[in-house]
Length: 487
Image (tube, rainbow, N blue to C red; front, side, top):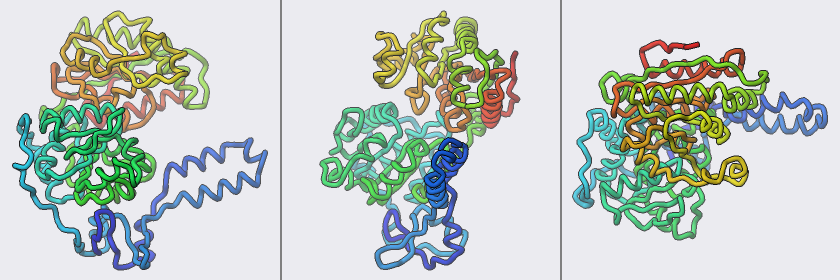
């Protein structure tokens, strides 16, 4: 087994056992098949096209990562080298070299960051030693410091990918403070400064870079690529950047995230790109050691606003997002958390209509943090809320002058909100990744030793009760305490 490029491993055989090992089910296609089966109108209206589409999807469902080069040699993604070694006993021959420590004095610190905690140091050393791998550390554990130290250890032209513009902007600022603005560029959010040693880019912008462009000529020279919150980048964008896009020739590859898992069935593909997970720490571990806040979750029972329906999306929108009973209780909890317990509050919402309900019941000062407002959303929101300065809102909150933020997904992932004492979770659903990212807006050990998390269970709605039960299980993975249900 030979590592012949940063992305490719030549295999000694392509037997049935190898093909079987490298084959997986694409759960996103499996979901499409399930939805198609439920489409009675399509099945009865055009049986021939229905069967044709069903056959296409079934063919797409099984994905195999075994491929062949122009000479007919079998190969697969380089990140699977450890799994293949363990499964088949193959030894890896590396033809592109192991990572070597560069001259770290080349890039001096502009501002020396704080000393790494023991787990940050261990995670950093594990990545630096292997040259291509991933780590799992929970939100709030200080993954940015690990990225900074990787840049210091390997001061080569580097592309750092983030899933969203807000994370891109914050990381750029952090790196400018550490290394100086002359060393740091940005691609995305109306910036195209890519001629620096380190370039931070959101995944969407990096995916759009095409051969022949100025951005390609600069970024394709990168010797190192680092993904921050790698699991949040869509699979296709992730694969394109790493395997055929601007990051394909990078000899050093590091992937930093709170979870290196996918819910779309592409876990094997993900590992093929990221390489093995070389270090992980759980939220529970770090909370027990005092590096993160202990979580104290409560689930509050509320009455539905309308008659229940079986469609999960419609039911969530009618009886959670647009339920005035939920909005009133959420605002009351926010008021009590701030006025009685001196806890600053973050209310996480999924749709703008939720904000319109909440603002009618809020009795403490707040700001509404959100992303770009579309034309349709402008018809829904009053003009005064069309624009917001999210960075200023977060700054005011972190300084303690703003009691409450009502925020959309624009602040639900990767944003550094420090003194949060209470999270009110109104995004619903069952996504473990989304729930943990939301809770992560308050896990940093600032202001309080405990983080209050308030969630809601709509009584009498089978769909929403099931969703709430699933979220309750997710909260239980973050704490040793039982989750109380109130009401």
